[in-house]
Image (cartoon, rainbow, N blue to C red; front, top):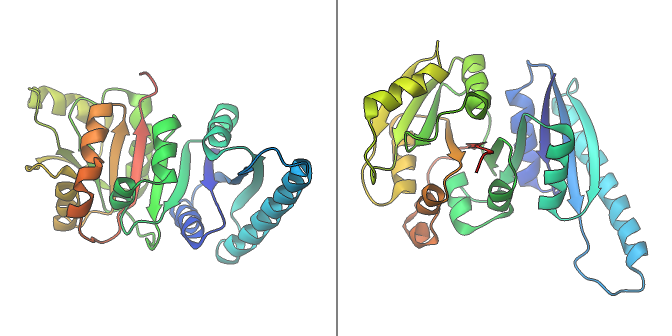
Length: 271
């Protein structure tokens, strides 16, 4: 049975992301783990153990409240509660190591997931440090069947079946069209050869290959999604240069508000 990790800090943003995930997978057999990480922001206090216990109680209380809210909408969802002491990154890394979830779902405060990353966030820290497929959901995004999913790629990052499996499963389940967008043209790539290799990973799906131009890659991706009425954007997290270009702070002020697009980040675990 599929296992999905839902991260929560009890905010409306996190709750919306959890709702998005429960709606997305409501017709599949899935175990959800609702996880809250709590940590001490100071040290040296003689009351540190007492504070830790209080934080633990608050964490569990918050999780029970979230579960109640989720079950009002999705009474049949299988949701387990996980309250963990430690930093968010350390806790999530341990959960991935212990339970190997197929997907991690978390919210972001930006109007779009791309904007959120440009501004900096816990979501970006999780993406940088956790080797797992991650779905990042903007704060007001509501789930709808993904008719079209955009895959922003350099045509060199789709080469391992296990890396793209979460996307392939999602596209097959919803019969989504996959729109591959080449966003980097700094190096020569044999396009026909690359497209054939990519297509081998997504047999039976409706595929198209596209190119965008311009220095502002993030804005180009958002415009392409708007022009094609796409629902989700996907990327592979494996190439530092690729991500630096996509999420460089210098383009923050150039971003404009767009309809909200969740992001699916796939991880190539071999560095």
